[in-house]
Each structure stands twice: as structure tokens, then as C-alpha cells.
Image (tube, rainbow, N blue to C red; front, side):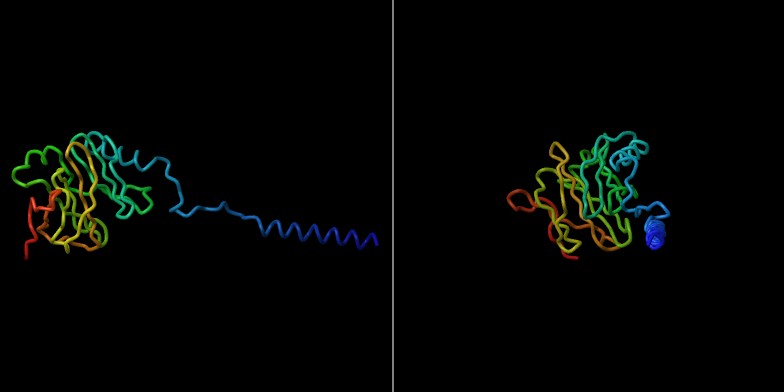
Length: 193
């Protein structure tokens, strides 16, 4: 009887040892890259890049989760920045920037808004963006199928408006219609091609 008990205990020890060796991982588990937490925040990384390239960085104005754009302000301009989908990595600046002084100086020539267009910032992704004054309550981009852009307040009668377009090229020239609070056209018009 003792021999059977000893053989049973030895079999259990061998089985548990084999189970332990098979069940425990041999290599440390590697996290997928999209789950790796960066050592510095995206905000700090972007501000550092803006300050290095353009002199200073005041703040991040807005993150757009849908288009993966970040808008950054320094003392002279606002810079759109493209990030990865997880908002963990800087991809590139989108030029031209939106210059405050240039916008003030060209008011009489351009009206209450200005625009910039950048085609193919990423595969089949383009963007139209610019400044608008308070008087521009509604903006319609006629040249891109009468779409209305997103917009956000910056300060003192100044807004940023932008729209991303899922195609490689923006139709130029960009044609816009701007309406005031009463729904009256104050700039542009629905021009036909």
C-alpha cells in the first residue's frame, strides 16, 4: 500500500512539474505597438517641435479625433498637425500655417475669411482650413459639394475653420459662400463652374 501511495505522489509531482513548465510563459509578453504608452505626452512632443521649428509654443487649441488633426498656437500663427490614429505620435506639420498678422493685413482684400488647401496630406486625405471673423457664422465650401466645415473659437473675433476631405486632391480654386447671423451672404456666393 505504501508503494502505491509513493508512486501516486511521484506521479502527481511529475504532472504538476510538467503543467508548470508548459503553462508559464517563457518570454515576457510584448504589448502591441498601439498599446505602448509614450514616454512624453503628445502635447509636450508637439509643443517642443513647434518651439524648435517656429520659436515658441503657447498651447494646443484642439484635438480632432475623427481627422487626427491637432491645432497648435504660437505667438505668430496656428499650425495644423497630423498625428497617428491613437494621438500618440506626431506625423507632420500641414503647411501653409495660419498667420495672425497676414490675416489682419489682408482684411480688405479677402473679406471675413481666408482659406488654405493642402492636397494629399496622407493617402487619400486632403484638408481645407483657414481663419474666420465673428461675422462669418456659416461657411459653405461650394467647390467640394457644398460641405460645411468644423470651426472652433481662438480669441477676439477669430475662429479657425477646417474640413478634411477623403480624396487625394482638393478642387482649386476653393469656392466658398459665407453667411452672417441673419443668413445673408457676406462673401462669395454659390458660383457655378
